[in-house]
Length: 290
Image (cartoon, rainbow, N blue to C red; front, side, top):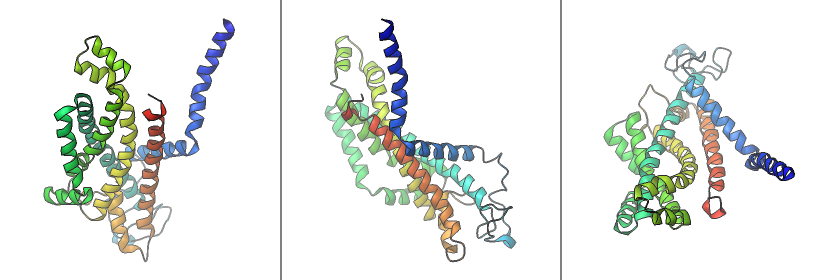
């Protein structure tokens, strides 16, 4: 008996270590970069940095120095301060917009996959209509019409993410709606709301959260594209996309002004993709995880 308990304890201890090793070094490097970006973005106001909006025309495109660790841009603003404060805008839009898609798309997908019938046809048809429009063109049109603001940009990108989250939630719900634990809950007289919230939501939430990280990466890229085209957040607020757009005018004399925010965006998007893909593989119901 003691030997059996010792074996069980050993398996419970070794299992998390084995799972951690299966994640790989790239996963933890991506997590480390994400933590670093979030930390500097949150602590931007307390870091010893100059103001990202203070201009010094005598220091235009100044090289890297002890005073300006990444030099200055075409208007004499500190490039490192703009890069860190720009991370705030990119992360706020990249996180808040997928939350909108996750909330509305996840709810619609679960309801459509559980109740089926005409409601499912209506939901899937409306999402197909929304997907029929090219997302970037639709975002350009709506942003140009409503005006440039952080709220408008976040809302339109969130609405564009609803169909993708709806499809993920619906597919997961269709897989789980005929499982034994759902049928048992129905046989015991559980209400639809209880089944959706207590039985299905915890299982559907796992693939949705994994897809959420992939959605964050896509949203950061789309926000950068809109800001690059001048339809992102209005100046003097800076984001990585607007910094890349401003830096293209100095490619011949100071290419770092475009490359530094591009590298930061690339590493951040790559990190979200790596973490999202890894978690999606662990939560894929086809692999018997659920």
